[in-house]
Amino acid sequence: MEKKILIVGGGFGGIRAALDLAKNLSNKAKIVLISDKHHFEYYPALYRIVAGRSPVEACVPFDELFKGKSVETVVDKVVRVDLENKNVKGESGSYYNFDFLILALGSETAYFNVPGLPELSFSFKSINEALKLKKHLHELFQVQAEVPKEKEDIVSRMHILIVGGGATGVEVAGELSIYLKKIAVLHKIEPSLLTIDLIEAAPRVLPALPPEISEKVLNRLHNLGVNIFLNRAIMKEDIENVYLKDMSMKSKTVIWTAGTKTHHLYSEIKGLTFAKNSRVEVDEFLQVKGIENVFIIGDAANTTYSGLAQTALYDASFVARYILNKLKGATGAKYEPKKVSYAIPVGSGFAAVSFMGLKLFGRLGWYLRRLVDLRFFLSILPASKALIAFQSDKKLCESCKTCMQYE
Image 1 (cartoon, rainbow, N blue to C red):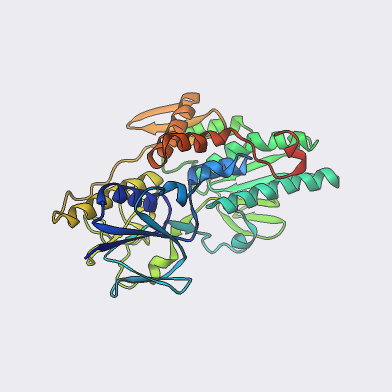
Image 2: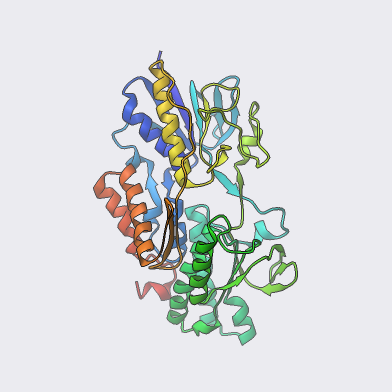
């Protein structure tokens, strides 16, 4: 009887698992991937969309991704997972049975119960959120150019506040510091009135990385004109102000990059056990502890390096190999976490890279980061389509009439 492998989630882990299984399974099992989107979103490129680049690089339709491969994709939002009866329920009301289940739901934005943040701040964990933020930024300049205001109001309107000095916060701060100055000139607004502040609760930016990298990135951000506030935690936000523990700031644009949490659906699944960090406990084969043939990969698995795209990809390939071996009556090797590398871009032409003990900074790091992007696209698409997606980063894709004149 044909086995059914169900993959829930169309992010890094989900698509890698589907592609690896399809490549080696032949007709031994049916692969079904369920996602609430029609496409895969390349999260590392979202900060470039905010800065006016084409969303093509961050969006790969499943039709292209799985063309000619034995993967069935279903667009539905999973609302319930029943491990006992081996099925999941979609928002559509449909039920999907499985013999093997791979849960790759990723993470969600965490606001840490800070009043006002969910309603008044911008995040960008999706293409839609990135485009929404870009539209808002252009509207600030458009309104200011059309209806000139007092200098104090201009300064408040042109004040961009980024909360979170991790990789995402650093990337968007570096990119916007260059991009928004160009936009200001196009709208005939003095660039010196623009302020970008980066707030981090820890004593340094990129607190998870070595201090040497933090220092280099801090200097780069300062050179780009970004103000850095360390050891500061945001307490609340209202329409006009953001309140820190010992100060307040006026801003109409708060970009929240300071936290993620395990996808809420995991907490609703009976049979899972959780570590203190709220991630799901898994065994030496990434199976849910005590439950056979149900796997957790990526952000939600309680493994050493979970939370990063490269770990999700590594987990997915491991689980695909394990399932393939099991279908052949074998088991395979146990899971061994793979040490991760970092490549953090900070404005065009500069990146900080930590790779196998080697640290690179500046333009060489930038080229290495772009090679990482290209390598990923080549791993999921034919070479011609991978190059199109990769090179789309060079294209501007503006939405306001003023900036469209200069594309």
